[in-house]
Length: 145
Length: 293
Image (tube, rainbow over all chains, first blue to last red):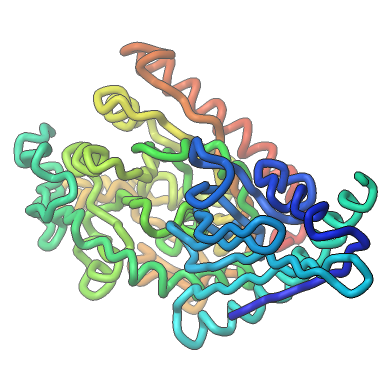
């Protein structure tokens, strides 16, 4: 299952990446999400974080590790424990000098038909949280410059 | 009850022989505690069904998971309610596996009759349910696994409805000795709401004593309740259909028994049960009538 949201920000990708690439500061704009480092390394490929989102009755997630890092363009995470998931931040320059900031979450919770049903139910909460996070990120970036 | 039957140091990361529980429980066929029977992939595939059950049916709320140490062995000490269908176990097992992932092993201690029950016992073992005993628990700690224990056992889970707001460990302090000897922190877990899933009338302790059920099957109670679909339900041996009561659960701060109380288990018992009673009172205060809200 994939949930994706994107937003336009009136700043260059380098300005947006100052926020997105500052991983320990993500709790400032991630909505409905627990985000905390679990490795001494907090930036770049290899950094590990515990990520959890309240879905229904419980917090669901696990530990993710940065597997791709391209300045001003991309950060990709892959699960090392817990829910099988990949998280991607994508930054693209727009014609008006701004940035299209996109977040993608791919996840697979197993469980066959019922698992697929639960993935769809969870997608609504995840999509709302991601959209609120993007709006919070935009506010922080546009206020900061 | 000594853990003389197992070479603990050989267990870490390796297949191991099933562990004999306490001598009295070993009489029940199939009650050996097999740590290798836990099946993480099975658990992963069953979590979505449990999520539906706890979220839609029991509308569970779980708080304080962040208080659990990030790694290493932990002894979870919990209260439980709801007779043999105790929803508290389902909610905590889901919460733990969803939070930390199925890769972090959690073993739940249960009565020998659960692990020996045909069909149910095999399924329970895949979930990591093992027959209660210090030897098996210490072996699990040696693997850096967490263990969940309900000290109140059948006495607590079948207590009458009028005692639903009580932590009823029945004076059992073995969990404190286990934690201290193993050097493992205790993390109390408090649940409220399980006793609203049916109507337990009496725990039938006097009847159980008269029938010598303790010596025959380590049963200290013979509960009588009103429950679906049976109506009058004696023993609850086949379980029942729980009503959709709301379950509230809170995880408390870790307690280092050895550092805080030494070998004063009476004081440690008063502290742990007191903290849990305070939390249970606060959780139950959130409940409004009717009890399903």
